[in-house]
Length: 448
Image (tube, rainbow, N blue to C red; front, side):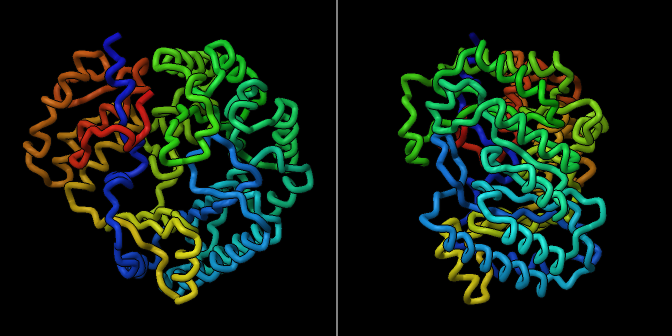
């Protein structure tokens, strides 16, 4: 199979460009403050809040999270979060009501109790102002959701929620330490709909131990039957040298590359047949969903939360390991919660990694984003609009030739297209525009 070398290639997910691998250590936090202060008062904002706590560790997880020995640790974390939010607000001094997107990620944000979640939302509203009609979203564990909690979250203003479903098959769930029945997820889904949530999203995975083509097809059918507005489908990345808890997963039970490809394509076929449009690399959405409409109109964007309709001027990030984005570059807070909290206690920026982008970085970012969103791009047209010479992508033919020969990419004049049936290889094609990319094992997730 001529696709195998590309399927097994480690390539970035391109939720940013340059990618986090290129972020510089010891990056001055003062730069982050300067970029924040330089935003015009009318700038629209997206805010990400990272909650690095879970009730129980799932063995497949690649997120920055931990299981606290007491809730007191989480309460202290919230105190530092609020303090950093207010410090940043004093720097911005912009108009209120500019936050059009607020996203709580993790970890499991609903590990926090209602009081502390509400405290963070109130702090962001006081600091920057939540725009009327904006999106307020959080990730959650359906095992912890009750009917009353769904109502409380809705009263706080949350209108979108994402569940980590992964797989409904009990043998698979036992192998990844994530036991949650179909009935439990269905009940949580009902609670959210009854509470008035406008959007419910599910995350599914392929490539997990014990999965088969038949089992993932069944999970896709069950998930679609609950009518979530969006479904994301990710391939499991086995990196036990980076996430030690993944050593609990038996590598001998992991599907090989042929099986992973078959699982991914079968899930797509099932979801397409049940009314879900394929969006970009790995998302699916109902036809009436705003993400589908944005994809159809060419206005969809891609950031650290994946595919989005968010077109804000800046992404402000709060919490340990959280990544923010400005026109000038990217910033990341300390991953270690102790270092993160100590910097905040000193009234300093918690940012310790980042990168100031160049004009060429921004050109390549625009090309990669359009390719990842639209499965097609005219790099010459984007280069011309940004004032670059024709030879800025002079090395592109050499990089594209193998992809074209394999049927992964097509070239018509200056326009490069990835056929819909080859969307799983979008990242391989995007890498052709990545001036920083160097093929290296165990640096990124495999393409399939």
